[in-house]
Length: 267
Image 1 (tube, one colour):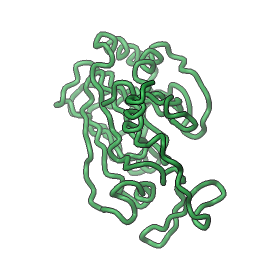
Image 2 (cartoon, rainbow, N blue to C red):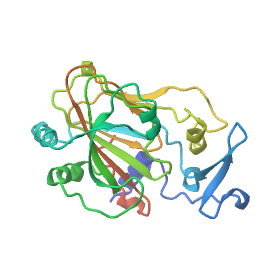
Image 3 (cartoon, rainbow, N blue to C red):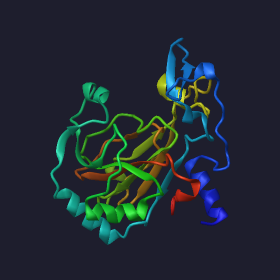
Image 4 (cartoon, one colour):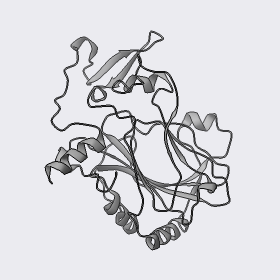
């Protein structure tokens, strides 16, 4: 890998490979490596010390079109539509309890959100996609989400540490902007827990409380979206009778050397 490519890697993933880890005060650091921060309401919140590392990450969002051949997208969509989908899924238990619409469809394909285990992708067609879009991270979990008309998610985050990323590949052919279903990325200040880990952004506990949409993308067929897992995001409602299929990969760069991380065509 060239020096220029290493520089691009650092920029895309929001950290400097030459940057040393800052020392945190012992009084504020737990035995687990967490740092205790005081929230505006006087309570204390434990955050992973890794959130103290790196530059502003709240705009670490990349989108790429044309990575996957259009004919292959149709093939992958047809395969996905013939699988056994489960109904009634939500992004979290809290969202399920507050839900105003029926849950979306979901298929678990591999890995885990609760523990880090080494595993191989078992589906050949999924492996074909991953080989094209993998930004150079270790895979933690992958799955399919499906949204019908009127189904919308809730704003949530995928991870609480500085080394987790999410890659989404949209598979529904012929999707148009008027079909809806866009993904929105928000400022990380929607609650005190988010603000606590946003210490290196303008939206930390002592930063701006102005809430806003940072970026938004409609789910164009074959579009690949990569983002820092700490960024709040939401899938908005589908507006037509089309079925929005998204293939989601969650991964980490934890334990990897900078030269092993390659964002490929994300710009």
